Length: 165
Image (cartoon, rainbow, N blue to C red; front, side, top):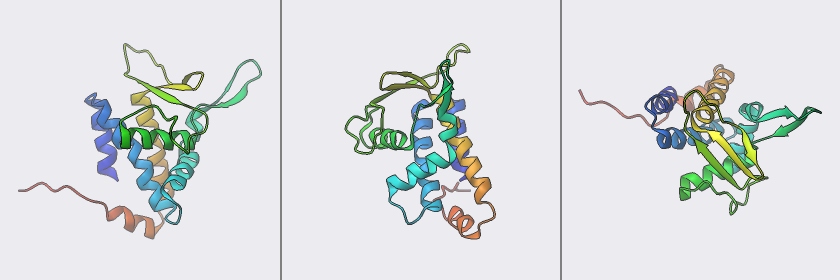
């Protein structure tokens, strides 16, 4: 998993946003398969998101400090499906979606931070922050899983790319 994490970090560093986003959206699939092997792909992705990323996508807003969830596990999974299978940000046709209809990803610019900005049913996310939030969730999950020998064994079984020497 470490080389996948480093690949996302390198893509962010090199401003290779599509690569960073593509790989970042696959990481919860991988972690979810190890964490919840008996659940379907969608259910394990959603469960993993809710356990390891949800805190980054909810906030108390307004004068009454009402809790608002910007991104649910269902909507993130719908994004994953729309983007990885169709190259789209529009999730209207995704069965599993909750509230959102579309996403807009923004590149970091001149110190501005535009993230978790929701207008109606469209959510703006800053691509580097979103990818880093996924990495933070993965790192937390790895820490939680570090003492489980079965999970460690599965992590060691990943595809590797070798350098010829």
